[in-house]
Length: 426
Image 1 (tube, rainbow, N blue to C red):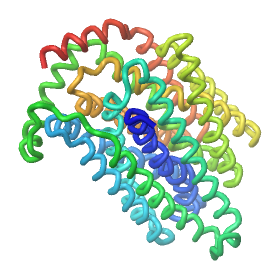
Image 2: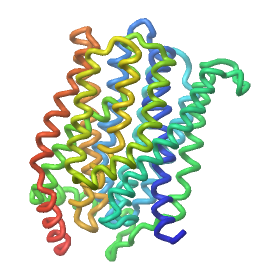
Image 3: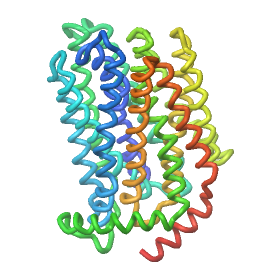
Image 4: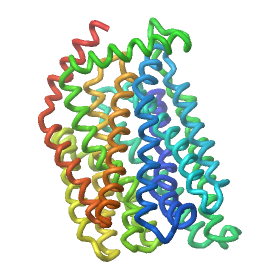
């Protein structure tokens, strides 16, 4: 294996590592356990509202920090150091969920928020390393490879965790409750261990005027203000970020809240878990297949079709009544989820001036996380105000439609030209 291929696989393995958190914890067991064990199992409306706020508060914290941290990382060449810090903060906090007792929903929310901040914070610097491991021609492929490995890695551990939950005696575990708590520990170990290849084999490009961390912090603050001006000057990137802010909100909300939606509609935990596993194992080949599909029709059109797919899923979710409907929707999500995430990341990379990767990906992640503030709160508020979970689900459709409209107006050829011109003056 060449050094370049080793870097690509080491970088992609971080998706394999951290997807265990997004699958087993964020999408899988935490929403179920939160409702049935930590919160009030007899009040699904209230627990939906509480979980929506927990996800939104985590997003607010990282959204506020993201561009500032990105500016510091670019000035100090410390992307990997920040990735290490946030990653292992998430690992420690995830393991802490094992210690939260029954009925302690406030403590569960606090630990979950800290773990989510670690997960999302590390992703800023993981994404910003993509240009250092892939050429422009390979960007879609490498980004899609990361998501594909994430789906299979997260899916494999989740499958093990599900077996632990359904058949605890196979593993010498006392009961299903203990099995879920041990699943949180297994995620922490998986995430921590499979991050090591990235730390060992992915090299961070050194900038010529790199600063020590202390000076990078003050320089990063000054640079942050300049970047706001630069993004306004690079109007194409501003339009893309606004579009991304809207449509990725819908994607993130469905990822985080879909199990809670199904649970609130009365589906059994076993059915919800089976649907999640379907998403993971369908999304693995679909992410790679969608990369091929986008190479034939164009990356931008590929994203627009994926947004259209999510819109159809959201509309159909309003009408679902039996578990077969839930499984069909899960299969559709699996087809589009990897495509919309991977291709959005590579589209944005085309617009980023060289030497500004972490800083601009800070804004990219900031808008994604601010979007995730709106989505869960909107769904939770509409559900609480109307007493109807279905209307809460339907409200997400607004975000897909508006995001797709704005994305259709983005000229990526012009954006690349402006980024190259801008890089010459850095």
